[in-house]
Amino acid sequence: MTDARYRWVIVAYTLVIQAVCIGVLIYSFALFAVPWLDIFAVPRAEVMLTISVTQVVAGLTSPSIGKLMDRYPLRRFVLTGVVLLAAGLLLASFAQALWQIQLVYATLFPVSLTLMSTLASQTLVTRWFVDKRGMAIGISATGTNIGGIVFPLLVASWLVAMGWRETMLWLALVAVLLVGPLTWLVLRREPPARPVVSGGAEVVERHWNTVEILRSPMFWIPSVCLVVLNLAFGALQFNLGAFGRDVGFAGGDIASLIALNAICMILGKFSFGAIGDKVDHRLLYWIAAAFMGLAMVVLQGEPSARQLIAGVVLVGLSGGGMLPMFGLMYGSRFGVGSFARVMGFAMLAMTVGALGPMVAGWAYDITGSYDLAFQSFLALIVPAAVLMFWLPAEPVMRLDRAGQTV
Image 1 (cartoon, rainbow, N blue to C red):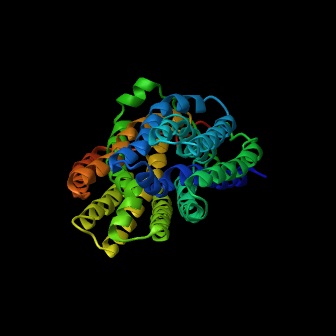
Image 2: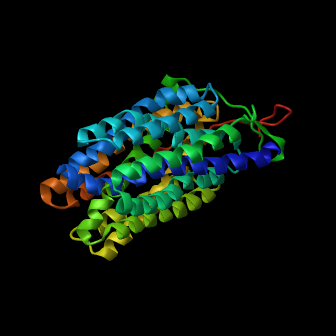
Image 3: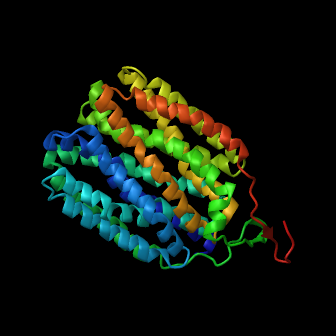
C-alpha cells in the first residue's frame, strides 16, 4: 500500500487509541464520580480534584514526552501507555478510600493519557499529512468522542449490573485487547522522512528549540486562548454526572447526555477540521468562543432539562473544535519536526484548564450552584477572543523539487 493510502490507516488507528484512552479516563469519569460521592461521602470539589490532578500531571509530563516522541518510534510509547492504563484500572478497583483512587489518577493514568491519546495521535497524523492535514486531524480527533459515546453507555450498563469495581476490571481487559495488537501491527511502518504535498512539492522546515518555542507568539497566543475554552469545557464535562442528577436525570439519561456531548464534539471536529485548511485560524477560534460563551449564559440560574441539553450541545461543538485547532495552529506554524515538542508544551499550558472542574465543584459546594464558575469563565472568553487578533500568520516554507520556494 502506498504512503498516500496508508496514512488513512494511521488516521483510523488513532481513532481507536483515543477512543479507548479518552473514553475510559475522561468521559467515563463523570459516571464513576456519582457512586464515589455516595460511597466515600466527600464534597464534589474533592472528587473533581481527582480528574484535575490527572490533567495537571499529564500536562507536566507532556513536554518531556513530546521531546522524546520527536526522536523515537511512537509504537513503544502507545504500548507503554495501554499497560499503564490497564494497571491503573486494576489497582483502582481495589481502592477502599478516595485518596487511593486519587493516587492512581495522579500517577499511572496521567502518563497513560500523555502516551496514547491526543499528543501521540496528533503527532502521528502531522507526520503523515501535509496537505489535507486539517481534515485528517479533524477525523482523527473524533476518536475521543467515539470513545465518549461507546464507553459511557457501556460503563453505565456495567455499573448497574456489576458495580464500579468490576466495571474497571472489564475496562482494563477491553483496553489491552483493542490497543495492544493493533498498535503492534499498524505502527510497524514509519512515516515518510519528508512528507510530500499535492503536485510533488516537499516540505523543508526549521527545527525549533525550547527557548524559541516559548518566546514565540505563535505558541503562547493559541495556548492562552485555548486554555480559556478548556476551563469552561472541563467544568461542564466532568461535573455533568452530578449536574445532570441535580436537574433530574437518572443514570442512563446521564450517560445519554455524555454521549450527546460526544456526538456534538464529533460534529465540531469534522466541521472545524474540514474548513481549517481553507480559512483563517482566528475565525475558527472566534466561532468556538461564541459557542462556549453562549453555553455559559444558557446554564445560568436553575437550568431546566432543555437548557442543560442546549448547554451540552454548545459546549460539545466548541470543545470539538479545540483539538483540530491545536493541530492546525501549531502544525502549520512550527512544522512536523518540532510538532511533538510544541504540543508537549501546549499540553503543559493546558494544565491551567484542569482547574475548571475543581472550580466548578468548589462553586457548587459554596453557593449551591455553578453560576459563579460559569460567570468567571464567560469573563475570560471575551479578552481571549480579542487576543486572538494578534495570532501571527503561518511561516512554514515549502520548496519544490528544484529548490524553489512555492
